[in-house]
Amino acid sequence: MRYDSIDNSLFKLNRKNFTRQMKKNAIAVFISNELPTRSADAGYDWRQNPDLFYLTGIDQEETYLILFPDAPEDKYREILFVRRTNEHIMWWEGKKHSIEEAKEVSGCSNVMWSDMFENVFNMLMHYTSHVYLNTNEHDRSVSMGETPELRFARKVMNNFPLHKYERSAPIMHELRLSKSEVEVALLKQAIDITRKGFLRTLKFVKPGVWEYEVEAELTHEYTINRGTGQAYTPIVASGENACVLHYITNNYQCKAGEVLLMDCAAEYANYNADLTRCIPVSGKFTARQRKVYDAVLRVHREAAKMMRAGTVLQDLNNEVGKVMESELVGLKLLTKTDLKNQTKENPAFKKYFPHGTAHFLGLDVHDVGNRYEKLKAGAVLTCEPGIYIRAEKLGIRLENNLLVTKNNPIDLMADIPIEADEIETLMNQK
Image 1 (tube, helix red, strand yellow):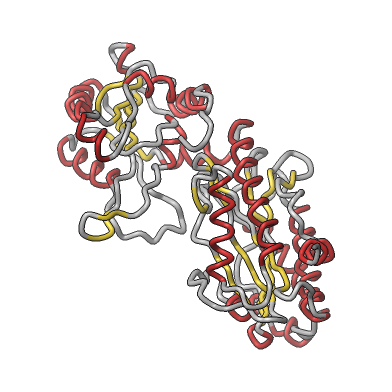
Image 2 (cartoon, rainbow, N blue to C red):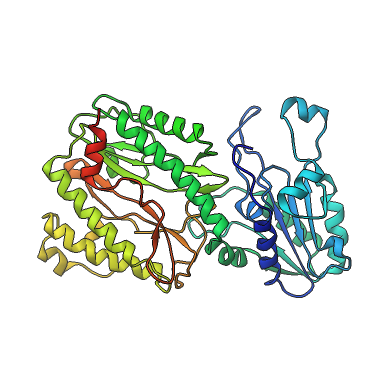
């Protein structure tokens, strides 16, 4: 495993917290992601179902978890199923978890082979009345594909139509929202790797380099520091490309006088950082670029102050919009007439700041959480205001990751350079 082993007390506690919220005489099932096919016999990169990882720490395909706290025998209260290995798999794919290794990683005392799952599950269904099924209920999900969990849900509901069915997602969302000390430490590791990648680019970027070359520098640094991958498809956007919010082609040559926006971060042990920085390709911002940059930084700092326990994320976005209005007027991008004519549904600032200020972060980059509920201590959020001026071929976004507390938030990226002067100094050091 590329990352250090995680104390299985984390997964034991997570399972305990989940089962506490289950109804009487209920069973819950969680299933790993499958290997996605690209074409022919080639596949896309595989990543574990974050809910299953949260509950078991198992980073392997063909994994199942049954939770049945009221089972008639203690050995059936939690059962982990892992892929049975053989000589053929060892030759072609490498080592898989043994039963004992899976017990050590997960803290589950009862581990079986995955080819036994269906028989065991069908048997246990005769002793339960409620079934918790898990699906992707993220409010930004637009996937039309059928996941293993969705296929399983349809099969179970067809085979056992008289049982009562419950959703696991609301419980999982609540649990995953507040990060434990162990989870925060894993996020900090991802952030530290991300920091090293960003500092590497400050020495590399100059007029004439290609966006994909910058991406390669970041990938190198993440990998050599034991990152388990890119946290998301990297955005390396120079000049007008920075005004495309999800620009990922990264195939443009950086020119003198442009600003390069990099929204790139590392993953470590399935936990994700999320960083955005903007740097001058020539090593120094123009006067106008600096004004826009400093305006975004001021908004960033005001927004960060608002990220306290008790704040509602949706309300925070509205409040940050008011701060942004003032900065846009100062930059002569908005006029008092624009503000007078704006509506609640179409605020003037959206012309230059069309996205939200924050999202939840954790096992998913856009992690689970409810933007309409009050924030709780332990949540981790991004803070990412931006100003995008297409007419000037200039886009500035600055993004850090913050840990919500009862008092002031903790900036987990406080040691990653963000001041324009510091960035210029680092870029011009010999």
